Structure formats: C-alpha cells, structure tokens
Image (cartoon, rainbow, N blue to C red; front, side, top):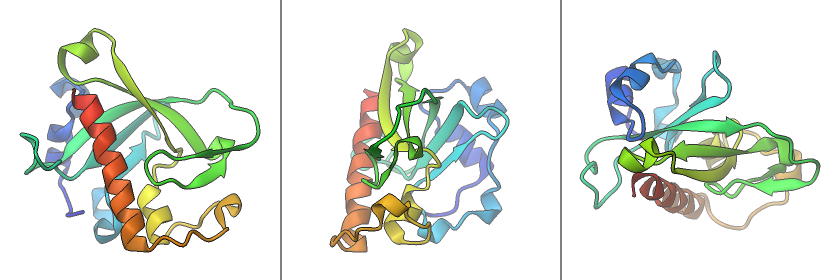
Length: 168
C-alpha cells in the first residue's frame, strides 16, 4: 500500500459523515510500514469500541483511484473458548483474537441502520499475519502451505468483497 496522508484518510470514509471523519483519532501515519501493508487498520485507543480500516481504491468502482475507508464498531461480547478464523486473512486465533466488527452501510442504507458484519483479527494486523512480520498466535503455528503472494491475493479478494458489501 502506498503511504497516505491524514487528509486522504479522513476523506476516504464511505460510511462516515465529514464531521465524524474529522473527529477520528488517527494512528501515527509516519510510523506505518506502508510497503508491508495491504490496508491500514486500527482501533481507536480513546474509544476501543471503534475501529477503522482504510484500503487502496477498489478496481471497477468510482473510487478506484483513491483510498476507501470504513468505520467499524467492535463487538467485544465474549464467545467463550475455542478458535475463530479471520474472514479477511484466514488466520486462526483463540476466540478472543477475532472480533465481530460491524460497519454501517454507506449512504441512505447506513443512515437507516443497515450494517455489514465481519469476523476480523482483533488487532487488524492481517497484513502482518499474512506477510510474516506479526507473530502468529500459537494456535496458528501449523504451517499453511500457501505462498505469501497467494495469501496476499486471498486477503485482497476478501477485503474487496467486504468493502463492496459496505458500499452496496
């Protein structure tokens, strides 16, 4: 992913008003490993129920040439023991390592209360798990035989599918 500015991040949100986007607590954009990110994802440290995801433009959409951002609401309800798998990067975590996140749909549908949910890594470090710079949870240490390039391609397809659902 190419580096983006705070102005680009704030302008990217398809399911937030300009006022909401202006109030978002952004991560330190200068500290991001842009070359190793497939999307920028973070949890608001001041409001841990809020999370955000900004991806490069989606081919075949009017916003193909600019980032696409979505605001998410985290559901921290416990799911007990066991394991869960992230729907974006397919990393298996203990149940607490994957969170149901809900995004309001873009436009009128979102204003009417319609949402799209997805199970995703609680820390939104999907790129790191796929590319190997974030340590895998112990439960995921059984090696996947898929190449890194194929994992990245799968992540991008899953991410694009989710973002298209938010924009429908």
